[in-house]
Image 1 (cartoon, rainbow, N blue to C red):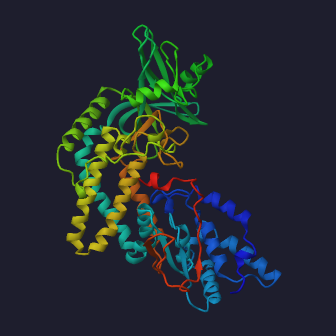
Image 2 (cartoon, rainbow, N blue to C red):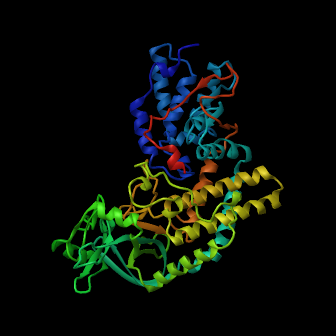
Image 3 (cartoon, rainbow, N blue to C red):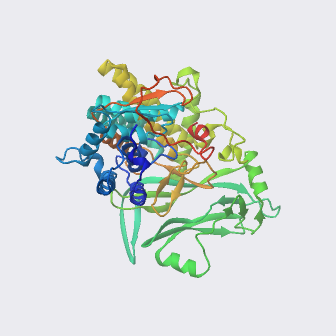
Length: 533
């Protein structure tokens, strides 16, 4: 075999810079299809595939040409330049074919994960094969390497259409639990303050977990906040301010912004300091220091509660985020959702195999990467969701399941119906990922962050609940839009093949592959199995 380019060099500095830039790209990127951990950047995967399949340079002149060519080839924008007459993608494919005797090389990634390497092999004109034995990763690979290539743009249109079909039906059942507002809004930009009235839509609900102060002379309910910032941008700062009633042993809240917040900070208020840090709490009423042992014990014994404190709203697209304290109308809507969930749980679930409405599978109690392994009383997966979050998930899940039957009636094509519903199922997954009691409010972006943003599921003291039926960040509508864009980005002329198997038992014939290109897992750096559950 000839010496390959990857054995000589790669433009590592330029690739690193481009990979960093790629992280900020959202629309159409496969990272927005479904969460997967340690997914390799597409531009780096493209470089690895190309450099593994073409010959090493034979002269300094050719080396310089290949260096510059690789830098151009491995940019995000190059992914769809094939329609151009002198496309770098076309040149890359031609060079790969030339190095492989005129035939598209067969490339295998036997630890394919999120699919970056086989997807780039497809883009470069190869016959791509991927192996995974994690069911979540296998479905991601099917949705990345097979379905878009097999069904084309029609698939994107139908995912969008049936996504709206699901939303319309779920919305009918859920909208009473997510009331809109008519309120006076204060909008602050820099030193300007604008007041206006109008109808606003909730974007998210800010909750805090609660415990009782252990001091015999106090016993106040302590809202557990890691910090009090709601918005922390150069030209916009908003914070919750705890109002302590020592006589009645109660903590209420106000929202401060503009001059009021500046004055409070001057007088010693620090929004970056909450009431809990590393599971150790401070009682705002009596000042008692509370040990992490007590906090964990309260959680284990089921005495840790939660409290709806604030509501994030918007007056419409481009109108920014506004904040208000939760009121009785908000609490009543939540109580109604709680009651509705209890009614539903008494009915037979629509899931296969007799599964319960809410996931009741046990969580690993010994893994410190999971909240269940850190002594906070979480024992089953369904306990990660508050009642309204759980109600939203089972409602959307129910209608996704019904969508399969309707698509089958319309198309009489079980495989196509399965493909469309795979993406709708991903939508439910993405909703669960960002709408649970471990999701947090990002005060620098003013949006809800995934509970799976790291390689763990850790405790969140103050969490954010998403309004899933409105067209805002993390809503069903925005989730389906992201998924549709990924499908459109991965429609290639060639089909890939995802195999549900293990890398230690490959069923392909000997000498049938031209290259095996893998990014192996790094020992136990990522607990893939537990996070996939």
